[in-house]
Image 1 (cartoon, rainbow, N blue to C red):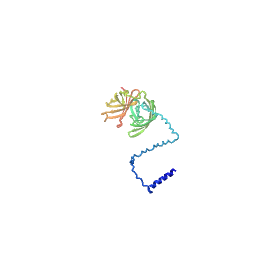
Image 2: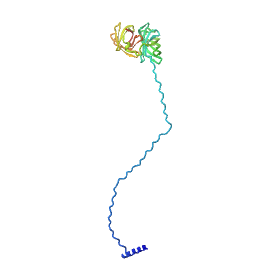
Image 3: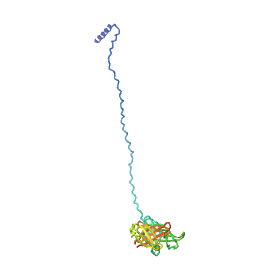
Image 4: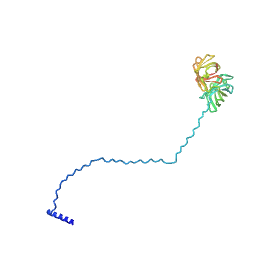
Length: 303
């Protein structure tokens, strides 16, 4: 009912305005606040997500690695004994022999004259080859007397034999004999030598210092002195020819140098070789000049 009354009222009002359309009411301006411009802002920082690295690939599996054991150590190397030292004995034909074998295997044999152990006559020098029980040597043999060829002046030997450490050395020689450049023949000989146990294993200069008198080949009387400083001086008694030299100790013997001065020789002659003593203190000297072929062989007793 109320609804109908409102409709009627509105109709009456309309009609009172002339029956036309209602004039629009004058609009009033309304102040509105200005619209603020948005303040620009930085774009947001995008933090990348944390990506953990993939886990490491596990090593391939398989049978366990077996480390082989260390190989056994090789046995220690035992050096072959050396026949170096001083020996004394006889040839098969009865001549005296004095031998020096140096640690470097340089070897010297001195032979006495037949029937006279104190008169040097010949020598053999070379390099000895050896095993623990055998030895061999190829070398020249110079002598003032060859039993198998008295007119010969040189021979060459091929020697071989056996040895026992610090006891003995023996063997045989096959020799060819020469007179000048002429081959005169062949012969054989040998040696039986005993190791000189009375000679110190390391010979010292003090063991050989002194004056010695004896003979050099061929049968010349000589006096020789070895001084405490290792120098040598000497004289051939019959001729008055003097000589000098030096001594260098080497194992059970010594290396020596002998120099013969002029005017007894046409020039100074330098001879090199060895010297040593036997168990009684007798001195043996073997030196040679490789240029002229001159030899100084001496056997002497301490004065």
